[in-house]
Image (cartoon, rainbow, N blue to C red; front, side):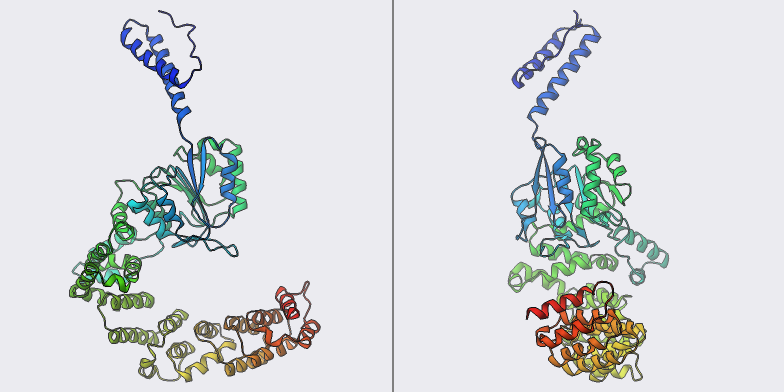
Length: 583
């Protein structure tokens, strides 16, 4: 038998299928056929089968999540043929649950392109004016872990994350020294405690890269950035170069593209893979999914929270964010459910878990973590309101006894925003007798001390940067009254250092001043300013205030006549003049 001039001809799908079938029969019935002929027929059969498959294959689905720039999405759309790639934008403008909507519609993505600024931990967001869409990482975890969204990521071959630090391998958090101390308290030797602490830190470091690998488990290739990512137009330009070099043929293949990495070589682009089945992180993924899976009833999630609370405190600390989120989402209506109420009761009456939790909280190195754990203990039914107040008072007392930082002031003011700690202020003031530092005064002022408030407000024009910082933090939480505003504006006018004036004025900008006398005083200060920077700072304060109170022709004229030219007039001054003229 000869095969020399046999040529496969183009045929229809049915014809091709019949041809493949007939060749299989021929193969079976022609044992004496030459080896070269058999090889040729085999190749022809495979080519025909591949053609049939290619002719009937559906286009790959490119899912896009565009919460900021559309540049990257459009670069893909321009270069990928419409007959082979179907684009689906998952974001539905004006609909907050758009990811859940995509799950309900059973969208199945082959390729995922996410465009948005990334905060390094919790969400992708936009910097565009008027944009309200964002993508919480927790929502990605829910989609990845829930059966209700089983199709969305089931076919993924490639993920492109166009945001800063999306694949940064550095841990977002480190388990601090109290973890090791907790392990020793629970019976471990110092050597074992150190070893376990290192292992837990590695497992629960919660880097951006690990979070993305957990979410996109099993995905062959994930592209992202280890540090700063290029802005949208720059990224699109680099993508265009990649596609002009033939990159379109690689999209959806599920293989790392060295060509793409070459075109992004000037950036921090790197690749990773989704989590594989044999990695230690799989245990962590199972736990994460127990928190995120929307298929689990609330009572089941609370039972899992209870299990976590019974583990080593090192693990409890690592899951603190998720425990807080789960407990914080429980509503009064939820508590009326018998199974939920029973799960919460079992936690509340677990004395052993309570004891180790509070011991860890009191030993926490970071006051903010200690405060969070105290608040959570109250929510879990482990502390009464009086006990919670006593625990928080002890925390603040410890802060006052040390070198008070601006973070301590921030925490004290935040804890007492509702004035629930005003009653403990006298006892705490007695524990830190005068003379007090501005930091100590600021903490006590957060708790309602009128005397210490005066000292803190005066520090707004202090030449010492640390004292000013304490006052600035305090003012973010406590508004000045009209009398204090007039005193502060007088103090600013009497400061000879223009840099100190600008610094104090910038701190006033957050006050949104409505007092007419204070606004008049600031307007009076404008022509007295010695530098354009001070005038710009005054204008910025007025723009953020009820400037209508000074919208008079003589004020506008004073601003025009007295502004100090510095090249072009500072934008804030021009903007203020225009707005006053419109009134």
